[in-house]
Amino acid sequence: MGNAVTRTTKKGSGEELNLEHTVHEQFSRAARLTRYPQHLLDQIRVSNNIYEFRFPVRVGRRLQIFRGWRAEHSHHRKPLKGGIRYADHVDASEVKALAALMTFKCALVNVPFGGSKGAVRVNPHTTPPEILERITRRYTAELYWKNFIGPGSNVPAPDMGTGEREMAWIADTYDVLNPGGLNNFACVTGKPVSQGGIAGRAEATGRGVVYGTREALSFSRDMKKLKLSTGLEGKRIVIQGYGNVGSHAARIFTQEFGAKVIAIGEWNGGVLDEGGLDLEALDEHRASTGSILHLPGTTHLSNPSDVLEIECDVLVPAALQNQITLENVDRLKCKVVAEAANGPTTPGAEARLLEAGILVLPDIYLNAGGVTVSYFEWTKNISHMRFGRMAKRFESLRSERTLDAIERATGSEFDAADRRLIARGPEEIDLVRSGLESTMVEAYREVRAVYLRKRQIRDLRTAAFFVAIEKIATAYEKLGIFP
Image (cartoon, rainbow, N blue to C red; front, side, top):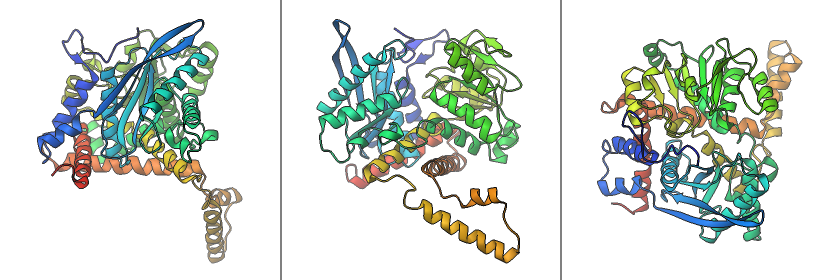
């Protein structure tokens, strides 16, 4: 078994480390500040149902039994949405907690889905691809037979341990089981672009983390309290976890916004360069050695948790839950904690961070980029139309005419390269990134406004949960389910 970080365990501090318990505690802290009756809040808090099952897969000459789950947290909006996690430590409690977080983050960023989550207990790093394919296809069949997957009912996506490959297997399996379905490929998001996916989905969560962090750092009043300048340029970033989320965030932080990623940690250690890591060299080193460790010219971090304690401006936990706890929180030397992972900070540790004046950007806001772009992919699949296809040429011609008019009025001409850049019509990736950026900016401003307006709310996480609960409760009221 792997590291069972989500079970109800106790560390030396006596702190309870159970993600489901943590989410309920975070929810309750915000719910008690709302105007809604307890019976409605109870409905919003807990998962509506969870399907737990065992299924056989042939491995070599024998059958091996695997355990799978799919939790449906809230049906106030349909379809339900949430990733599929492959990990050898996963359990029902973790799946229910992650489904709840999906509900709240969808509501927060105005994505019209209910929350769901799925998982299979398997180690994707040690399991051969052909076995993973059998597991994925059988898991999909189990969900299909119980109506836990479908473009109008429940739409999975990638999560830890899964990616485009697994999503393509799911789409193909569903298509075989439901022949002739017009919207079959909308049954799952995060697919390869060639299989109905959308440009920018793989980077979406990491890019959303960057957009959200940049927005938080744009308010001079807030940055003055942290003794930081506004913006990302020159900021020292430390990232724990160099998977899909952490690697894309690192690249976007540095290449597009001028920040410096000075340290990156993985499960077996990390690397540090105070002058800023060369990410291209790091990627090449990992491709050739299978690890980020011992990159030439960097300081080796032998303990996986060492990366959390490096002095920096922004710490980005992008790995597993329960990484910042009462055991290590007092050794953190950052000014902002940007939660790219789900549940990386325990409630006790967060209280200490807030007491120390450290800004915590909560997971239900900051890592919502994935589900936002999944929503774009789902709408693309339902409409059967690539974004930008009808407008690209029109926008390009309109820009050309505008440039022509400016040149006639001024008597000077644009540089050819500038003209091509300005007149270029938007590609799908441009529209996806624009929509994601707008979503993250608007959501942060909504959360920040509640944080500043309501005296009882002392942190952004409570403000984010408050905003999400208000939206979900309103949906239930409008449905006529709760008076």
